[in-house]
Image 1 (cartoon, rainbow, N blue to C red):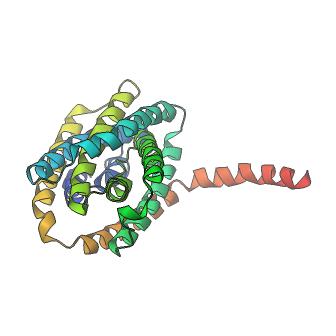
Image 2: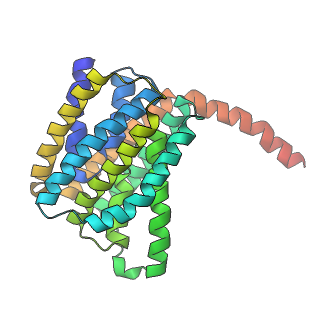
Image 3: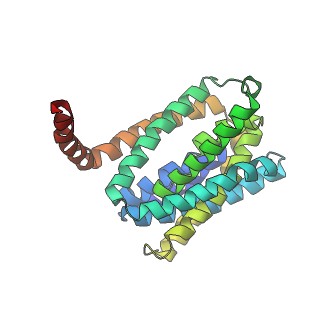
Length: 269
């Protein structure tokens, strides 16, 4: 399983390089279900891996002229604050619940990715500037909190936000999103240090392979149909999200059991 897990590390980097996001969603399940690590430890390690690989990917896009630093830092500032809040919140959330939230995020990500692959994205000029500012700020905080809580970089939200609200081209949004993801991930990893045990050797090996994957993905991005990639990746996310929900169905059943008496009491009132 160790060999399989390390082999899949390259897939994480490849997805980040090709799509500007998505790889971070794969990292935590690989650590948990392939390498057998606890949920919280996996989330922390996933943030470190994604931080390093995203920074390498951003450097590649920077050389290609596809990183808008001003837009990335503007979006990333509030996102980093949200990430730190997410790591503080995670202390009080059981690992199984974090995995359920991750699975739900996967399903939402699959929807957005498939929708974007079909070209369903209104032009940025259709948004009022005041609305854009509010939505961007709220989106930044939400992405950051998700990063801290479940270890996802949020590229599936950052890329369309940068296109819609910052007016970036798709290529610039992908490159800029990698910089935002890197900043968020480093803040999140720092927030988990001291809470979990980090196997640094395994983390180093996984990160090195993911880094190789993102370099390949960044080089290939101009040659591969983004629409086809997003449709295929959205299917992978649906399948993996469903698998995680099945593995943690006890959390959902417990929630239903506790919710039923409360609903009955509300009806009686």
